[in-house]
Image (cartoon, rainbow, N blue to C red; front, side):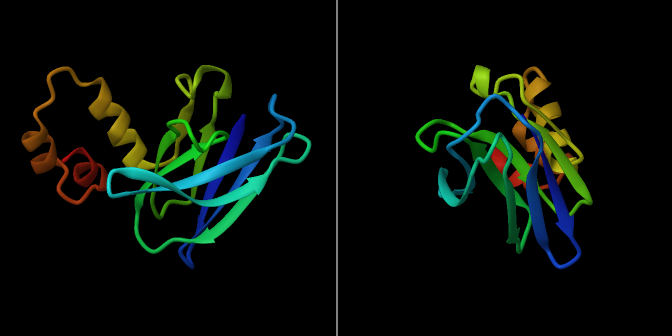
Length: 136
């Protein structure tokens, strides 16, 4: 499944499926990360394999995207960028999902791939990133 996050200058995002995927019906849940737990903040019905979200956002934050609110979602760092594309791999518990267009997400992926990363050094190098707040 591919979805598109689009941030408008009015601090709103629009999230919609870019193409149909294997899930023809059900719900897609958008979750916000608060107090080290994901909480569903919005959901939409999948109709013929497609869906759309639109909601205001105040600050860049970590969100989750899932089709099963009881399972761990795909982590998505959303911030004020033009467009963030997400290819959501529902068949492998989001393991092979791809997020592009978000500087925060790019930094998070780099962090995950760095062996023996020193958190204090990472934070010093990226003090204003939402990812630094998350890895604390």
